Image (cartoon, helix red, strand yellow):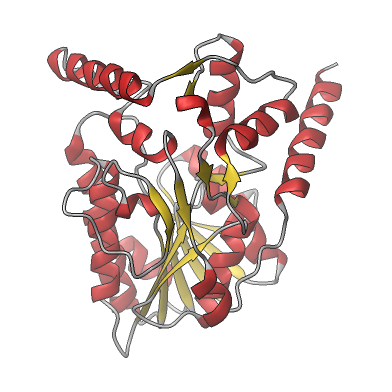
Length: 331
């Protein structure tokens, strides 16, 4: 297949490109910088210069493609909410218009369980779970809007499918794992309410496998959760991840209500001082990691034949092996 990918230099995008190339697909990836171009080209994709608001560039890049995978999104960092709406909502709308103009028959949108989060736990929810009346901001609300636009755009000419992985982790992680390691080493890390609640996870290879399954067999206008399988205990999983990097997990725990108060105070201070970036701990982040967040991928397994390609045990072993290899190479 010929596949056009947005967000190809991101964590999910990089691994998706590798998975597509490995199965013989020809990949074109949108890139807006020299660094992004290098990241996608070294993984076997042809570079299409532009960003998700450059509709004309995307139309040219998409022509002749069998599918589009829209993985570009702003996850966190800037405090300015307008940037999230610009990238996650307006950017998604531009990708949809470009796909329609280019005559691409299928589009897969990479979403998140955050579209259902309102600050309360999610317990074994599936795709029938309704959107909350009040989303977490700014990430959750903009991803929810984008997802709804994608579903609404489904037509006979363009079949649109949504994939929702939860807690993406694994090899090549340049964001989550390094932050956890840094926090644990500097003793800035603590468990929320002991961390004994459950969470669903999705290894990045399983995320890519879910996207491919949706690209090939997903029904237009449908949404599919993908995960590693049975949920895990949050504290046990994070402890195991840290151990692969030779780092001991903390024993310290703080009440979730206290953490919420601190996050709220930091958010208020950031607003008062007009900080350019979000604080390290935010109310939105707590909503996704400080309580049970479990989802069911039964629909994806049943309807599109999704199945994990790597187990949690093997994913952890891979992390450990890569860490040891990096240490050996560094001398």
